[in-house]
Structures are given as C-alpha cells and as structure tokens.
Length: 268
Image (cartoon, rainbow, N blue to C red; front, side, top):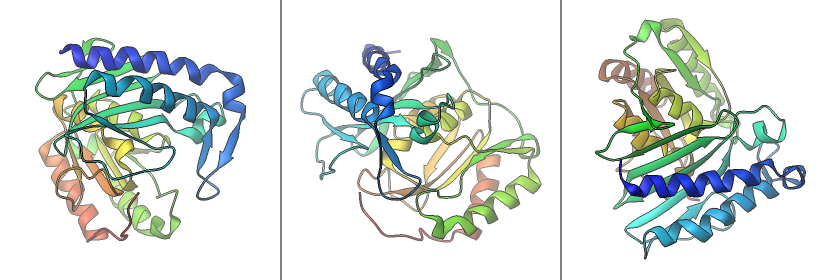
C-alpha cells in the first residue's frame, strides 16, 4: 500500500477529533429540505481537510459537500464528505463517517473512509489492494439468495421513492434481507469488507461514493454509476454495487427495469 493513503488516513483521523466536539455538534442548520442537515462539525471537518489534502498533491483541487461548488478542471480532485450520515450524527445513532476520495483523470483512484465510532478505517489505492485497520479485506462469496441489500428511498427527493421501493421489494423477495443505515459511504465500505453484498441508491452525489469505489473494486467487488460515462464530479447519479459479477448482473437487471434512465437532470 502506498504512502499516499497512509497520509490521507492520518489527516482523516485528525479531522475526526472535530466530530467529538459537543459545541460543534449542537449547532444544526437545515439545508434543502426537512431531511437534510449541516452542523458546525461538518464545516469544521471540511475546513480541516481543505487545509491539508491539496498539499499532498500540488495542483490538485477539492470538492466538498458543504459550501459553494464550482467547476473543477484539475487532474487530481479530492472529493470529500466531511460527515456522511449527518442525521445519524445529530441523533447520536453512532453510525457516521468521514469520506475522502481521490478522483484522478475522471476515475476514482484512491479512497479513505473512517467510522470513528467503531474505529474502523478503510483505505485503498487502485492496483494496491484494500485494507480495514491495516488488514486486507475482500467481498463475500455469497450468492444472490443469501445476500443482504443496502439501499434507501431517495431521502432528499421523495418523488423517486416509489421506484426505489419497487427495486427494494423485488430484490428483497429474491435475497436474504435488507439494511437501511443512513450512511452511504459506510454501507459501501461494508460491502467491500464482506458484511453485505448488494447496494442500490437512486441519487448519490460524488462525495458519497468517490472514496468507496476504489475500496470496493480493490476488495474484489463491482461498483458503477448507472447510465454515466466514468465518474461525474458535477452531478448526482444512481449507484449500484455488488460482491460479484453474477449478483451485479441480477441487481442491475432489476434496477434498469424499474429505473430505465436517470429520472432527473441537475448539477451540483
């Protein structure tokens, strides 16, 4: 494993200390709709990362969930979710994570995801394997009938909930069980670690998935932005992932029948 992801991991662990500051956590603002929140901790973590990540790769730029978004043209783009699962975070559910992905020449190249509540840090770089707490991880070998699906119902735009429910129902009836945990990056990381096997979300943003894609791929799984060329950093997109080719094929077939195209056109 290269020194790059070691350096990213050190920065992410440093940023995680801001998540435990009760004063930052208590300051909560609503953004977008009744289900979308931001705390001072989100802002503080993102600022911490913005001050340190670009220095690792001179000329790189950063896209973070919080604040204004602008068009990015650099070869190396840091794609950051300072606290994925903010609703979990403010409710003290104990399942939220920091996600830092490096998109290089339009493709997710490296990723670090940290769950401070369980002190689990996932990291991977393309071509160099995937680790969780410095131990190699690999997707499970479970077939579709014995798989767990992680999914959601398009919380931030419930107009698309019906299609999500249709996918979930069909997969649930053919598989073992469903999990809905409220933190995309950690759900995807758990797929890489062999804890779940299937994943579908109707509308993720680049910062939700940029770190997870290389971790899943290096752990032997498959992850795809549906109906996209490459990995967009300027818009949301549907995401599917699975532990093996056959499970991915079956999941994609169901999703494409229920969602034959991206049902929205928007930029970030």
